[in-house]
Length: 145
Image 1 (cartoon, rainbow, N blue to C red):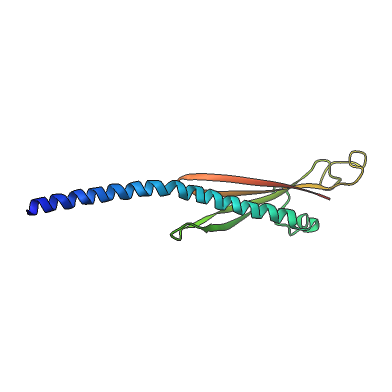
Image 2 (cartoon, helix red, strand yellow):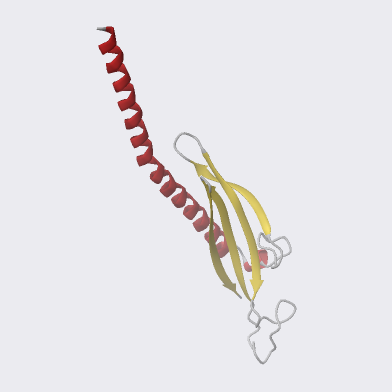
């Protein structure tokens, strides 16, 4: 009787562990998709921020987007997964002047740029890690005045 009970408990334990592993295999891809959605949402925020700020603030000395090749790197928390695990990464920001801008930001002339248009590309790159893989996403906003 004791042998049968021990055998039954061993089989139930093995079955329970197998079912636990299967349930974890189902939730792992969902967490990956959740992290992708959260980082996409953060990039939407970055894009909106680049679009809504006044042009003088974006091109000013204290801009969040320094002039390329300078890059401003910020550690950010994108959010939390179910269970409380934090999703973190970095945001790198820079801005690049259009070549046709008038000096000092470009090499254009009054002939090639008669309206004195000033154009800047604001780029935000998000870097984060899921498991052992690194992911990079970027958004670029073109601002002109």
